[in-house]
Length: 280
Image (cartoon, rainbow, N blue to C red; front, side):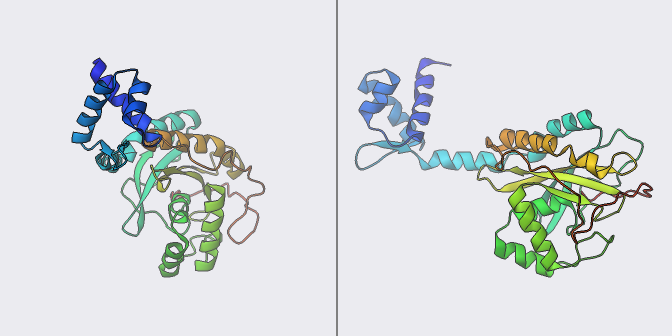
């Protein structure tokens, strides 16, 4: 990189700390004021810096527009996929990635389990929105009025006795997911299938996607699957860092205690799965 380009780029992180005058820029770069002025003028011509009325310089609107455009063109699936594969190689279970689109939560990536029992989920397929862990994570991030509006227009099919039965219970579940930063589906869509998931966040901290790990009881118990939650959350955090440069908030995950259905009954795993479906 040429010295001129290097110096020009060094101005941007300086101004990110706040407006600075010509003398401050020259001092920080270790150059004469005339050199600093030439660099600032070039950046100003491209909209990357802006000169205020007090003659101090700040970052320009063009820089923010470019950053926003870059974020919008990021492909979360492309960025997440290597992390999903790595997690799958470590634990062997099915890993999913999902997003919210036009009122549905849809799988956009899947890494198959290495075990003989496979999930029937597929990329492009909407999930069972009232029970799936990925759906809970995506909807929990919405502002409360939007969560309520969505919850009130959904149907609540009772796939199993552990399915969420109504809007009030769903809103309670979303509030808990929002607070704790992770979600589960413990037999809510099919009694023999369990799932744990974590959110992936964009540059503004909003949830842009959700990932999950799913497995049937015949392969691993619900308790054993929940023990993978810290690893799932670390994977989601790594994807968030690569996608947006942020660390997912929330710190260390709480340790799950007894496993409960939405109605509060202890989770008793079913050891005889048939035709496993997977809405994680």
